[in-house]
View 1 (cartoon, rainbow, N blue to C red):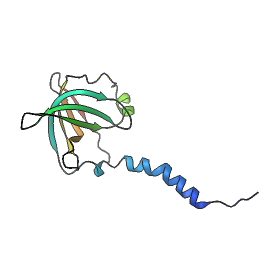
View 2: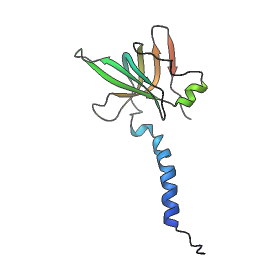
View 3: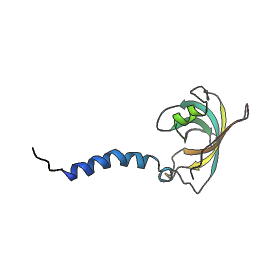
View 4: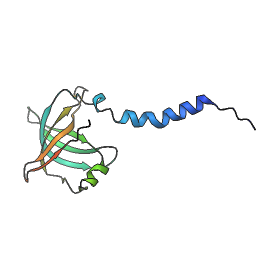
Length: 130
């Protein structure tokens, strides 16, 4: 029986296992964490899916045209732990989002830091990691 370990395979296997998990949490690679913007719109869809929750919202731009924006934040697991589920947002809900804009020019996406539903005053705050 050959007991030689193929270290290349071991290292490659470990990298393939752990690299995606590490890369997944790099918000600063997608969003400019040094900036804040405010976006107001109407919910078209609430995506209560892994790895991140997302709201798709219709936003009226300065030219009066409707643009679809993506609002992204935390995980479904943490939302369930906080007592929320898929029914939290419905199409037609008006929302105001403060957050960090995407780095990519023209990408209509924001990482939520605060989200308010003016109709009932409901507010969510993004969690800060220490």
